[in-house]
Image (tube, rainbow, N blue to C red; front, top):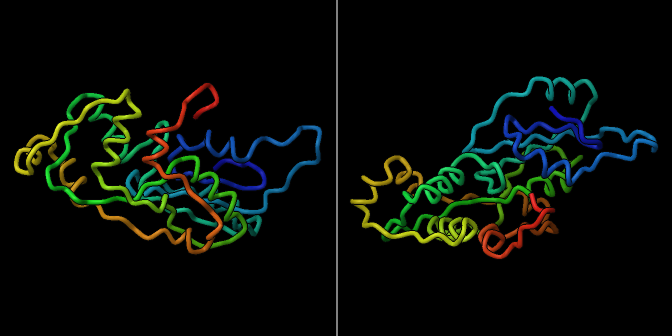
Length: 209
């Protein structure tokens, strides 16, 4: 658990997201009156696993905090885990390929929007599924990651050969399916970042995470 007033935060073991939250919830002025913690935020990432956080549960119960849970299918950002990391590692090694005829789509969200969504829903208890709302084709996400990683080129294999070449990653890329973003329904004013567009167009500098 991490306290970032006004929220108590549980990242369920996915601590690579902490810098995004620290930017969204900067430390208060030490000379100002302390800011109270008024809400709990729990982040669960479906494809990267989630660790229990009894300290967070006890703290929120003791202080009567409303808890909002953000459930993210896959998160793309620095330090990412799960399927996006496996794709990036394959691109880096030169072993990731497209699968001919694969039309599978998947749901993703960028780390900057996980933190921004937490700020939007703090104090509104419930569980929300958070995505970028674009549900890119698996091939498009692979190409966007390859662009981000020095514009690397990916080749295409027919399904039979791709299944042998990619191993378990083949199943992940062909069986994935998008999910509905319930966060978008609950908070229609929230405008998430298109992950693939961000990977292709964002200019990374010393201020980027």
